[in-house]
Image (cartoon, rainbow, N blue to C red):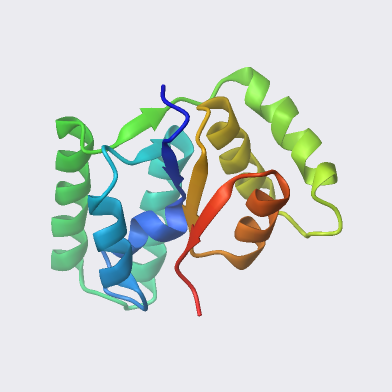
Length: 147
């Protein structure tokens, strides 16, 4: 895996399927990657985020079903390269929780960062400020999608 890969976290991945702030910019950026790197955790979190938006009324069930089908199609076609989580990532994530102190890094964000490191990603794309700060502390170049 080349060290020029960009790990795309779930906060950016969702922007490709839901119109929200900076979605167009995220889509252009993702289109420039060949292909974007995500993890198996991203797939789980993407489904959780989409279900939450459905429950909160951000879109109706018809849109939800269409987005689910499109995401599944993208995964099946190889539009994303998926890095699988493995047992060693949990120890790495635990280490990262304390190594980026005083940031309040969340558990799953630590797993994302551990996956990015394991995949030898040189950069990370995120819409999460704390994730961006932690990635910077770890020496990962960041592309951010927040104001």
